[in-house]
Image 1 (cartoon, rainbow, N blue to C red):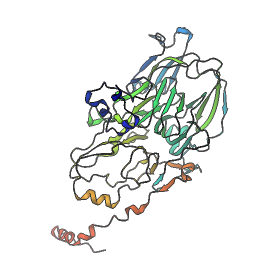
Image 2 (image 1 turned 120 degrees about the vertical axis):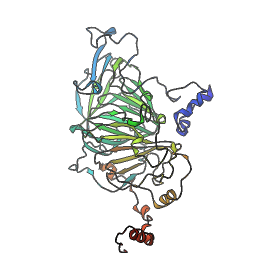
Image 3 (image 1 turned 45 degrees about the vertical axis):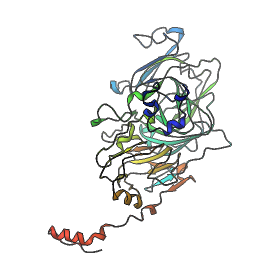
Length: 488
């Protein structure tokens, strides 16, 4: 029925995915109508998929002979002896194994990418200043695919240390052709902002558009097709993997639910005498490996080391329904552990449409300083609490213990009386890459003409109201038998 077909813009304007179900008057659907692919739901599951039935061996993984003469290949994303709950692996049954290649050659460094964020690296900068960037323009007049359009913004650590992270933007206008990419350093969490990504992986296809995110894990080959000028953000993590945050007293449901994460189904491409290049990123360096067959020749697979995607409009927001502003951890979609048992390496948080209801409460985020580094972006819509220059595609960055908070005008309005119960952030999704690690800024971002500083003048009007109450203060001190304070 035509009335059931929603455009991407209608999905962006919906308060929540539930709104698309029309109160049960239409058949429920799991993906947006312009998504051409099928998926398997669940987070952390062990999956299996066959493009040709009867291919996956039963009762074993690597028999002497596999149907159709296929090769068995295992991909392990964790130590072989990792505990069962943390053990990540997949078995691939393919036309030719990945080992059939012609060796590796060095590629020139991608000038605007960075991997070492230690302060001894002269190409990175550290500063307590609150920084921001207007949307980076998508280049015109030159062809850039997903890999050649990578630009690194900030990060911490080094991939060879197996602890740290990097944040990037991608700016591209061209699909990858006869070229696959492998990140041997870590996992990519990809956040499209403009333009959809049609991603071919060894496990099948993912169609990821603004309002959705996907995770391509370390060592997995993929190829990105685009439909025009395309921009987005990436969070790359080293030595960890993304998990769902614990729910604690929330109970069994809420935030990002496991059933809403979608994994691909097997879809192979088998060709003969077909030259392909596989680009590897290792230690921040780039290498090329050539082969005479398609790298996406997987007929069937099973395992739990599988790429996935998630629609952010399915996020189940929680919050205070009595008083006070709850910590932003309630907005966490995915988290990645660190070697510090009480502090994650990073969190991926979103700020999407929700109700604001707490009474007798200062409704904006309270003035605060916290130990995390925060890199924020806007996928679409408008986000309150940032300047007018914070447009979709923009970036805002604050290092640990830099003070946050709104200007005096917002403070004064929020302090006078309870605002009405209302929906906020309508038609908008902003996100935050939050890390316990101190991030440094790359040359590319530091020298960008789009960079600007948050203007401290926005807080000049935060007047000293306390001094206007000297008489009442003195009376209170006298009544308590305490000495009076001298006037300043």
